Image (tube, rainbow over all chains, first blue to last red; front, side, top):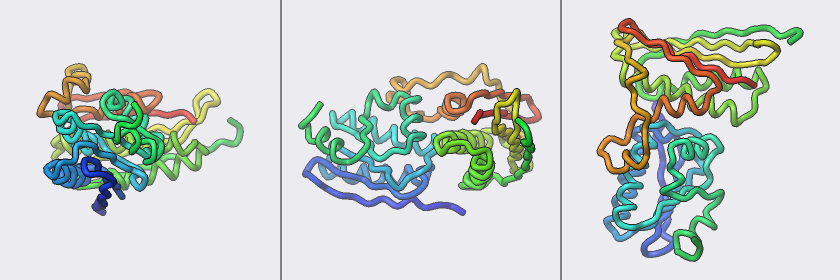
Length: 120
Length: 143
């Protein structure tokens, strides 16, 4: 019953990318997100939005891989944002302290404004 | 609570990828039967996922199985769902598990180690019993 996470990518700007996930963020799902994110970062992307609208469950292994992405974004002095989190995923991110390093938004519009540097 | 009928369910899952998701289906069924809200059900599902993957990864249980007992019951008029996640592995000392700190994790190669913190934060009561014959994580959430 292994679920495969699907990731689609949009590029709203030269340094900005949106990764839309669909499915369970476990170890393999997290690795797929990381693979796509690192490819984008190699292409010059420093500002990432992870849109989890179609992800209803995560586990801590998947989240730990998201922390790897966060670490690399911060090393590049970039920005990482999340949007469309379920209340439980958002609560979990707050429990972990993730909201101190990445921004959580209800939808993609305010997230992209923040990523573009048009709002702090 | 008058007319309330306790429900119990047992599930045995193999240590295999994504089998923790099978356990979450029982949480949904019993949580909905208790008329718990969607957010509380999702929080219990996440806690069960974490307890299962802890057992999968760390217990080294010889039978390669994890047992789950679900009880929907009431305590002093308060309805609750209780979930026990058991393995027959080598156990651990919960007191020796360090509290994860994100600032330190971001500078470390090891970003893991969040499972118990997540479980304890999402559930109302959590008890961990562990010895060299196995581990039982007993967790409860009230409606």
